Length: 133
Image 1 (tube, one colour):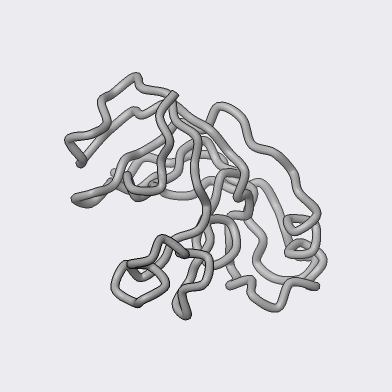
Image 2 (spheres, rainbow, N blue to C red):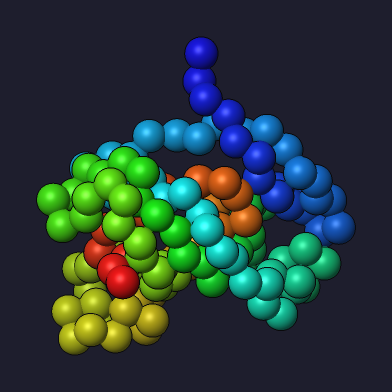
């Protein structure tokens, strides 16, 4: 039986609820974070109200969050470590990414906008997008 968690799920404009969803397992290069804090931003509200043209529904919003590593498939992070999430994920192959301008990647994605974000008990995050503290 798959483990479940509570998450704020937005299924479309003005269609949102607190739901039980599968937690998921990290892949190589990812960690599973237990979300400790998540900020609510104006862009989260625009997703809920259907005014963000980049949002991919259904979606767990929340791109400003920090957490504790509870499972790691990356050698640079250990269980118990605290980290903040850089929400911008580039392709890693284009010129912009190679120059360190991930935000200018033509295939850019953001946690909480294109991919599930931090309005959940747990979230899977690429280790390269974590800042340990």
